[in-house]
Length: 254
Image (tube, rainbow, N blue to C red; front, side, top):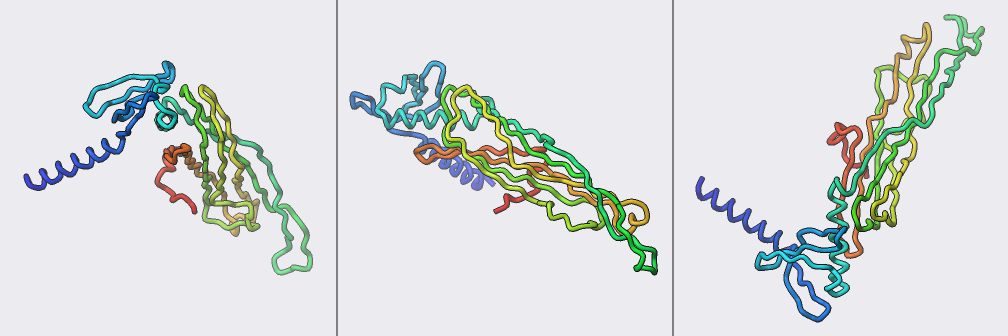
C-alpha cells in the first residue's frame, strides 16, 4: 500500500510539473531582454497582466512592454480565460413558442359491413406547436471575443403507445444547426435564435379512439456547444443543456 501511494504521488507530481511547465513561456521585451514566466491573470480594466516568474516571484506589467508576438499571446490568453469563466462570459438559453395551430383529421367513414355508403368526416384533430430557442451571449470581458463557433441540437421524442392516423413527416428526433460569430465586442450582448422545431399531439374522436390511441411528440430540450478558437490555434468549449437533466441522455449526433 505504501509503495503504491509513493508511486501515485510521484505520478501526480510529475503530471503537475508537466502542466506547470507547459504554461511557461519566454516573453521578450521591446529592448530584447527575455524572461520565463506563465500568465496568472489579466486585468482588462487596468490593462495589466500578472506573471509568475520561473523563480516563483509575481510581476505585474503592461503588455505593451513586450514584442508583438507576446502581446498577441497575452490577448489570446485573456480571451480564453474570460471565455471559460461563467462570470465574464455569460450564456443563457430559453425556449420560446413561435406559433401554434390545429388541423382536422379527415377520413372516409362508412357503416360496418357496407363500404359503398362512405362519406368524408372529421375523426379527430392534430394540435401543433412550433418552438425556437433563444440564446443570449454576454461578453463581460474588457477584451473582445472573436471566432466563436456555435453548434446546437434540439431533441424530440414520441410519447404514447398508439399509432398515428397519418404518418408524421414533420417529426424530427434531432434538429441540428450551427453558426459563427466573427466578433463579440467587449462589454456587449448578442441574441441568437435557433431554427424552429415542431411538436404535436393527435386526438381522435368517438369510436376511433380504440384504434388510434393518444400519441404525441414532445420536445426533450437543447444541447449547445460554443467554441472559441484563437488565431494561434488554442480552443476552449462551453456546453449548455436546457433543461439541465438532458445532459448524459444523448450522444452528440454526427
